[in-house]
Image (cartoon, rainbow, N blue to C red; front, top):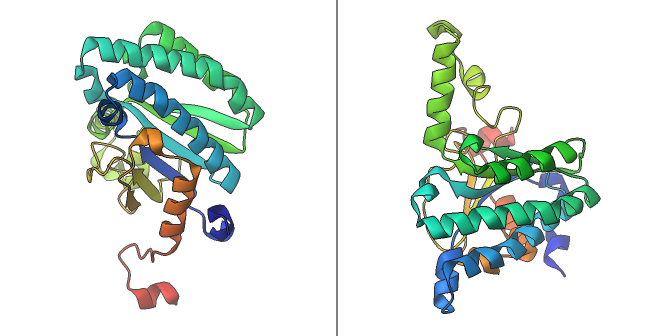
Length: 243
């Protein structure tokens, strides 16, 4: 039996987030430049996105570029930005064909103008699609996001008594998006790396040793199967959940 047929379609995570890690190390192991790993990672993105839509996931967030990644060598950053522009340009038609909406979170203003223009155009073109929402985390970090939310709350002179978890969530870049039930990280690293810290308070974590360029939809399906074996208690006891 294929992996996807084992999945209980009535118990799918509404939102999956993925830290796509290991491109550079994968390339280095093959004696290639790091950018070769990033280019190969695009195939993993395409297959994973299509697999998520196929199984019925409604929201998929990919950690594509962190605020800390700006500190990488300039040559690598420039190559990544060029790759991002060309990929968005090529794949917008695929998103339209598959009824997938594109969104982004992060400090998008820091992106090069050409990259930002391509991103905004693709977001506008796909805004009415409804099968699945693909969210790219670009120039993103949770600390930046949380600090930005606090600044906006202060700027709007919201009183202490008005501040609730629900209100605070409205000032995050993920406003209107459900919190991820499942967070996947590739390459064997056991870290969160400043990704969706507020939103993953009760997410299930799944780590795989595979580097991102090796990740495929079957690996996504395996992570969903693992998720479906877990009991999600949200601080309650097993007995309370069963009741």
